[in-house]
Structure formats: C-alpha cells, structure tokens
Amino acid sequence: MRERDAWVIAAVFLLIVLAYSGYLYLASPVNQHPFENKEPIFLGYSSNTTHIEPVNITLIEMKARLAGYSVSYGLKEGMSDEYIEGTGPFNGTRLWFVYTYTSDYTYFDYSYKENDTDAENWIWALIVDSLNLSGEDLDRIKEDAYSNYEVNKGRASSGCYIDGLKPDWERAMAHLGSITRIDKGNVGSIGRFYDSGLVLWLNDPSIIIEKRISLDVRIIINIDRDSDFILYVDTGSKLDDPKNLFVQVFEDLGLPKSVLDKIELEERYAYYI
Image (cartoon, rainbow, N blue to C red; front, side, top):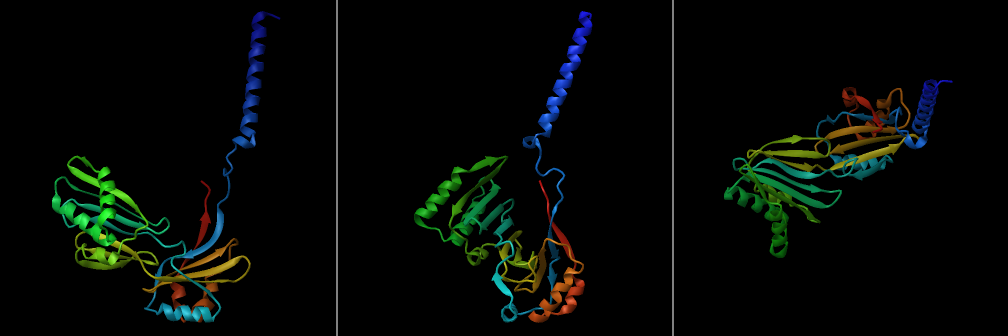
C-alpha cells in the first residue's frame, strides 16, 4: 500500500470515530434538553373579565357558604401590587411608587428637571406623608435615596427600597390632584386617574368562590365589589361544555344566568421554556 493511500484511510477512520463520538455525546441524556418537543400542559379554562349589574358581594358570600362553596378573599393569584405611576404636577416630573404584597416592601423612584426644587419638594412631601416618616426613619430613607442620586442630561433621579412599610394611599391621594376618572383594570383592581397625569392603582375587595365538582374538576368565580368577575375551571381534561358547570353556581349565588351567554371560556396551558 502506498504511503498516500495509508494516510487517506487513516483520515477517513478518524472522521468516522469523531462523528460517532459526537453522536454519543448528543444522544447522552445529560446533553438533551428536557423540555424539547414537549406538548404544553392543559390546565383548564378561564373567561374574559365580565361586568354585571351592581351586586352585594356580602350577600353573595353568604349564599355561597350556605350552598356549600368554599370562600376566600383577594385575587386568585394573591394580592396585586398597589402603585402610583405617571407624571407629577410639575413639568417633566415622573414617579413610580409601589407597594409589593408578596415581599412586603415599598419602592419608589423619580426623576425631574435638575434644580427644580418645587418638584423635589412635592415628591418628598408625598413620600413622607404617605409613609408617615419622621426622625431617624426619615433621615435613613433620605440618605439611602440620595446615595442613588444622579443627574443625566439635565434630569435628576433617585429612588430606594423600604422594607416593612406600606403607604397610606388615602394620605397619598391628597398630593395627586383632582380625579378625572375611575377605571377598572382586572378583577380586584381599580385605577384612579388624576389631572396631574398620575394614576393610582389599588386592589378592589373581591371574593373567590370555589367548589370541587370531581377529583379532576374544580370551578372558581372571582368577583369584586364593583361587580366584575372572572370564571376559572381547573382541570387536566378537556370538557365538552365547561360553561355549563356554572349554571348551577349562578343560580345558587343569585346571579343572572343570562350573563353566561356573553362569556367565552378559553383553554389555559402551561408552556415549557
């Protein structure tokens, strides 16, 4: 065998070995993506948010308990953040002021035109008043905020986190201007819009009424004080007519069954990342 032919054979053999090694590596469970080509998981159904004529949720709660339903308070996913966002009463002032229920902290950040003392005084008056700050607490929070102070292109900005303090939104409202309208968000939240350009989003009291129909099916209605509600069906199996499950619920709660005609229940899925 000529030397050149021997080299060609050796090179081909090496390529075969490398290709087989690469196949084994890719085929190894360690190197496979666990969620690759997985089908999304079916979770059940949920409706659009629907408004009905004013109802008394205290009376609905009483009827639900008498009919054997489980009743709890708040949103299905837990209490939402409450916050102020938007522009302040001074030109170019922006504010984000939020309380997070899941972590029990308040966070704010703001920006305004550099050297605008009126804007700065307004921001701090709102923060101090709504958090009822004084003494060492006020000094500590101001020190923390001003440690983050910076100026960029003529705009001053700052902000900080405050653990364990929830704003008194009633006191905050006194600094926001005049209300121009009140709008609904999702079930359990309501927005107050002000002429200053600020919006205050608050949780609106709601109740969650639920009942297990079978081992695999649970029905839920979340309704708030302003008579907005959303329906859920938690199930791992697809149903022919999931909306029909709520006919008896509406009858038990004294809600108009005709409203069900306006409701669409959409399938819910959990998707792999």
